[in-house]
Each structure stands twice: as structure tokens, then as C-alpha cells.
Length: 215
Image 1 (cartoon, rainbow, N blue to C red):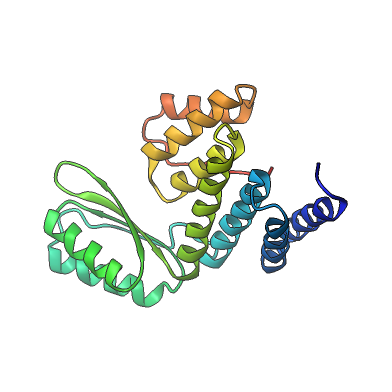
Image 2: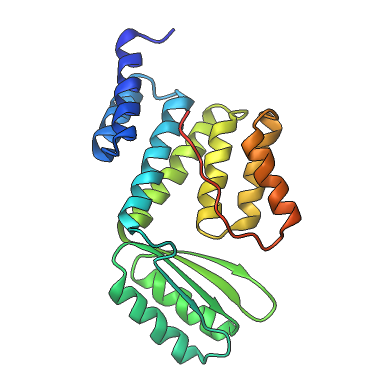
């Protein structure tokens, strides 16, 4: 049974999140977790706050910087990334590179300056997904919170749904779909999710991101 104090903390967290007072919401949910560290719902809600805070830190544009560098030399790829890193202090950089050396140079450079880097490889090159600054910090905290919720409750659909939304947001479509499909299997009455998965099947190149939600 949840205590009255614990229920009150959850309500405070939800109100703060709705008002976009992310720092307060995080503090409240962390206080709730000190009382109930094994509560999957609160870990999921905390993850959602981190996710929203990360996007807020990125500003109005997503991706924050996007460049199609097909046909460019490795030196040009590196120069483009260096320019992006100078101008983007927090956000998401997406590069399309069709040269393996260029992919390696860009990946090494981004990691060297403490970015989170994911790649979606293809025959000649890769899509490079780079998270920068506080956007990186809060998205990784969101990821860890959703995964912690799943560790506690492995049949918890909202955490799989939110994790899928996060991966889709940063361009990792395959792993995103795996998590969204898992969420739908656990919650087959989720009509919004069903429609989105149907869209993905009908439009393989659909890039619209899926929005997660708090519990």
C-alpha cells in the first residue's frame, strides 16, 4: 500500500511536470524514490521528466543541426562536425555520411568532446546521431530511468513505450520499433500506438517521432 505522503509526492511531481518546472519535478520524484526505490511507475515518470527537459534544453529545432554529407571528403565531414559543435551547445546533431573514413573521424571527434554517439550503418557509410550538452545528459538519464522501470517490472508497457519514443527521437528506428512493439503486445488496447505502428509498416521511410507519456 502507498502511504499518503508517497501519493502526495507523486501528485506534486505530476503538477510540476505539467507546468514544465522540470527541476522541481525531478527533485520531487527523487524524494519519492527514496521512499520507494522499487516503484516502476515513479521511475518511468522521472524518466519522462528527464526526456521533456532534454528536449527543452535543445530549443525549438530538432535536429539542432542536420547535414547530408554524401559525396564529401572525410576532411569536409570533420570540418562540418566541428562547425556544428561550435554552434550547438545542447541538442542533437544528425549527419549523413557515405564514407567509412568520414564516419570514423566524426565518431571519434564527437566522443572525444564528451558527446553521446550512435550510428545507423549502411553499405558505404552511416547516419550519425550525436547528443550534445545538457540534452545528452538528460536523455541518457531518461533512458536509464525507463530501463530501471523495466528492470523492476518487466511487463510494464509505459516504460517500453517511452523508451521506444526516446530511440525514435534520436533516429534509432529499429530499436525504437522493437520497444514500441513490446509495449503494444503488453497493452493491445493502446489505439494511438497501434496507429503509429501501422504507419511505420505502411511507410518504411516515415521519420515522424513518437511521443511518449507519463504514467
